[in-house]
Image (tube, rainbow, N blue to C red; front, side):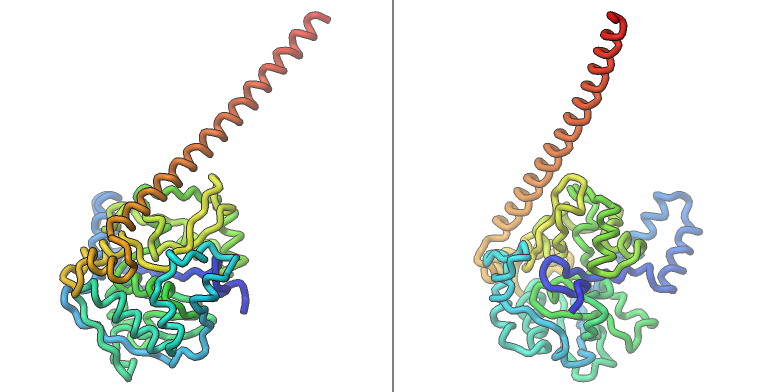
Length: 345
């Protein structure tokens, strides 16, 4: 298996954004033509994108385009023993992974939806034997990575009969991530609210090309491009979100990368429950029952980690400024000394 789909830190999905399809691009172009200013356009665009949230109490049907026996899997023990990963911490792995290890891919996906998605939303999920009539159609193409359309984009007529989600590998974390997209969540590293990531663009382009085989445009769309504030309904940047992938420190200018997260954070659950209120369990009860941790404790961890990351970033920036200033000062000092010596001679 190539690096493109290697488990561990190189595993990353492509977010299928709404405006990549022809009809959505045309609609967005019409919005731009109708807008009276750039700010007005962004407001119209935000309303358009937010329109892809599922309606409250919707019944969402799910079908499978294959049995998933061909996709690579990674077990709980393999994740724990993966020294190349930043996630080999029992506390950070969803405990459902152990149970799913004993199941087929199809039954594993059903279990993840039943145990992790269904309890916190006012939506109903029904699995169909015939995928052609399903709202969500999951394929298992190992050459197509992992991705999902966003929210109700799967209902668009142009997607009829096509996959709306692909799982090119299978584990609990990847499934939670892709169903997060299905519910309308974006990639966390593209969250523009208090995002501490300072990308080294050239390093990112090279990394994405070697590990994902992405061109520059795809890299910009899936890593570097931030969503405008008015297109984000969720929290500030959450360093523990299931929607955040691992990126090594070498891809940043402040030498601060991101963690690989393998379970819902408190902010994830809180936001999903607010987006689709009235689930079987409150966010607080769900988090305590599932992860044996209070929702607030998890949120506090995210806040603490973000504050720590921001502090390190500020210190790194400060040191760079000090070093640069010192070099300039030394340059002019020695230049002055040379001039003095020449005058004495």
